[in-house]
Image (tube, rainbow, N blue to C red; front, side):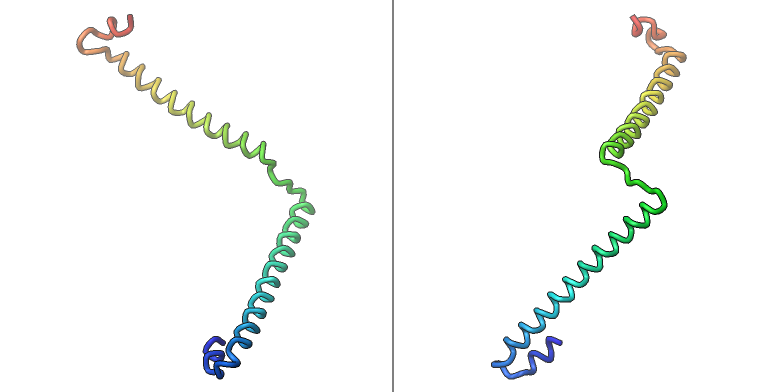
Length: 100
């Protein structure tokens, strides 16, 4: 389309570009309107099947629980490795001085 505008006489190019910009803006407005309609349809579908989106607080709670589960996993892992080391004993003093 821009090639068509460039082929017009210079005095007509500004008006043709303006019309193209208006058409482009109208297409974007239609696209945004359709996106809003699509989002509304999705909401209606979710509501009709009983889906309730997670609230922000619930999402944060789940993220925190996940973080804590991972932290406990690593704490347990370190605890197991420490216990294994203690069971083997420290080579210098058999671990007794280290424990005091």
